Length: 270
Image (cartoon, rainbow, N blue to C red; front, side):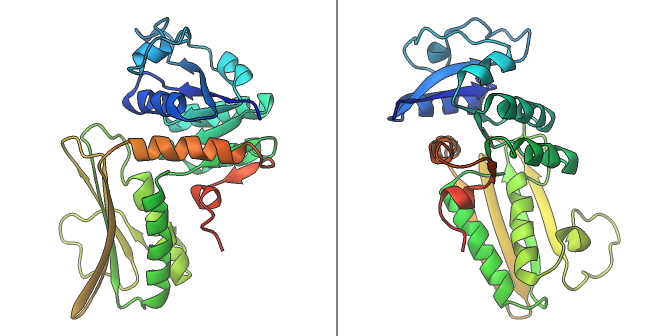
C-alpha cells in the first residue's frame, strides 16, 4: 500500500507542529500539506522547517479545500466552528478527517455525523491511549459504586486553554454517567460559588483549573463517608496526542464511512 498522504490544519500552532513532526517520523506516512488562517505570518514558509525538520519543499498555505483535495487524511486540533466546516470538505473529497478539537456544540457534532455518512471521521476529545483507558475504568468504577459516592472531576490545563471544562473532563463525566445509567446533562454541576447549599446526591461535579504550562491533568474522585477512590491521568508531552492522531488516520484508512472514536481505534469497545 502506498504511503498515506496526511495534511494538518493549524500547522503553525504548538499542536500543529507536533502533528507535522509525528507524520514525518511515522513509517508509511507523508506530510503532504498544512494550512493556517489567511493572513498568518507563517503562510509561504516551508512546512518542514516550521515544524523543526529539514525543509521538505512544501509551503504552508491558507486554502482548506486544496488541502483536503490533495490528502488521504487531514489532522485537526483547532476550533469547533472550523472543524465542523472542514468535516464537510472531508466528505466532499473522501478524505479521512481526524479531529482532536474540543468544545464542540450539539450542532457541530451533528455536522460531523452528517459528514461521516460519506467518509471516515475519527473525533475524540483526547487521543492518548492512557486517557482512553481511564475512560473505561471510570465507567467501570461508576457502575460498581452507588450514588452515595459523590463524583468530582478535576482538570487542570495551561493558561491559554479557551474552553472549560476540558473536552476530556466532559468525556469522563459522560463515562461516569453511562456507568450509572443517567443523563450527564441532568446531573452535572459545572461550578460552585457563594451559598450553594449541601451537595445533591447523585450529581457529577466539575472543577477547571488554569495556570502555567500544564499540558493536561485529569482526576476522577469518588468520595463516600469513610473512603475516597481517585483515578487519574497526567500528560507530560503533547506527543501522546499526535501519536494517537496519526494512529487513528492509519486505522481509518481501511474503514467504511462513519463517525469513530479512539475506543474504536484502540479496540477498547466491547
